[in-house]
Length: 479
Image 1 (spheres, one colour):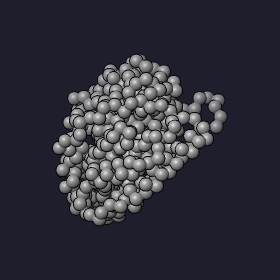
Image 2 (image 1 turned 90 degrees about the vertical axis):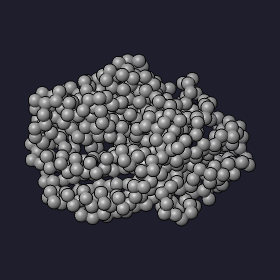
Image 3 (image 1 turned 45 degrees about the vertical axis):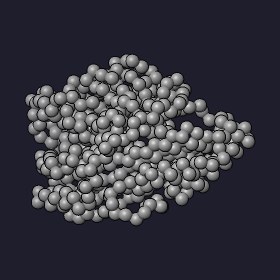
Image 4 (image 1 turned 120 degrees about the vertical axis):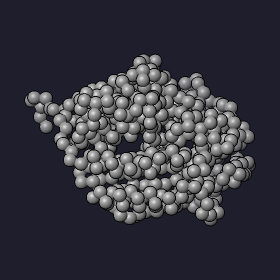
């Protein structure tokens, strides 16, 4: 736990709070010796109940604060960070001093930035101006006692079935405050977050569920526990699956795994400005099925919406694939200036990374087809619940590799018939999305790797011709 300077409390709420965050940032920046200066603060408070086998093995409470100050002197800019409000003054002094030193030494000026754009309406009744839910009272009331009760139920029922259960139930509050001294702009918002994950193993069968939302009620956690137990039981007795090309139905978690890679594939302002990636080389091209629309949409009432980024810029809906056609990229103020556009509100900085624009609430738009109807449209194929250990192989071709995991079933004559073993796969994501002929109606959300407040949300997909298994080595090939 970091030093947060927070008052001791057991109530579920922000670590810092809007009024205190605004006062601290404005006071610290007011007399700073810099031509321009701005800062953002992120806070996160949460409680998470982790369990495995027959016991809760970790009941974790988190309070953390991160602050980043950007000072500019004679066109030179510097950043300094702090992990507590008590360290804010030192970060302001360090950033200002470093910018002054850069100016004294005549180092190159900072990249120019686009204007931040108008400030949107404030959060009202826990919702953004677009109507997306930020604050769920159901999540605030979804306490550790309920998490433990759900965990106990999952573990007991798995035990009665001869298996084991492991997972996590938790909730958190995320807050972001921003202040720009020269513009006199201050912004603040706080949002709830409910999470659940569960893996059940019975003999050689297993099933996995994961979801997150601003609202705990939307997780349907109790129903998901029942479904995961049932699927794990049905997945027992797996048969080998011959390598080959199959028509597949990807469960919502497997489909959502594709979305984690859209930043790497070049749907960012930095990549476009460099002439790299899909948006730069295939602009306007029909790269996926017309049934597929992928957006970075922080205005949607889905995933983890949030009204502005760490530069105080109001977020908007950014289509990456508009009915399969390559469309836009996400930007921050620096890449927006380079492209001659306005920032989409996607400035981000993560641990051990330089600041850059990235996708943060990626959503594959759902349709109105049930998962059973998608399966009914497959004569012989495979249902894949989720992927595991996926990695980028070739970002230019949008190729990834990974393995299928947990509940995988053979589909015969439109029905799931028997469980099959996991397989490695190496596929092009965009080529796979080009062969989608069915999109489901019920989505699940999962965290985006190494993205603060980031989520990927997708419904099930039906894809024709999905290669599973390692391709046989050509004749005469040597190891």
